[in-house]
Figure 1 (cartoon, rainbow, N blue to C red):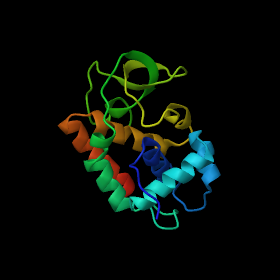
Figure 2 (cartoon, one colour):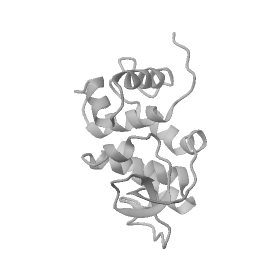
Figure 3 (cartoon, rainbow, N blue to C red):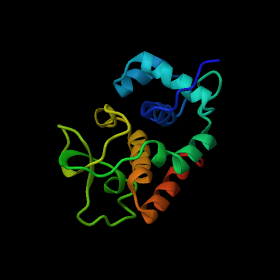
Length: 173
């Protein structure tokens, strides 16, 4: 059995992408192309997720309940982030749908730094560097990332809404 040296941020991103595709008819190369990462990174991510019991032994089906539990209770401790400098980017956390409809963020706008972004706000380090470039054509994937960023950086009320939205998408689809 392979040794598990801990989860990496791209592991979470790979699982979210698989869930957003809503089928098991994908290849590692499809995930790699969609996320702009190498196929070997996808393979290693899937191996780590298998060892962590977040995906089945065939590495095709995400264990949604376990993954949901990890996202809610572990993510912000394993991959913490804090708002940074003002930059141009893509809205995330409480600054993007589906969270912004529930929360009045006032002047606080959070973004993933991205040169092609159209909003200025405080930088939130994305889970993986290619996220900003890979969310444009997958609404569910973007929403899931926004939700988990809210869990990572939000206050209690924001996190509560984020958990509701996450469970709607993962457990009740």
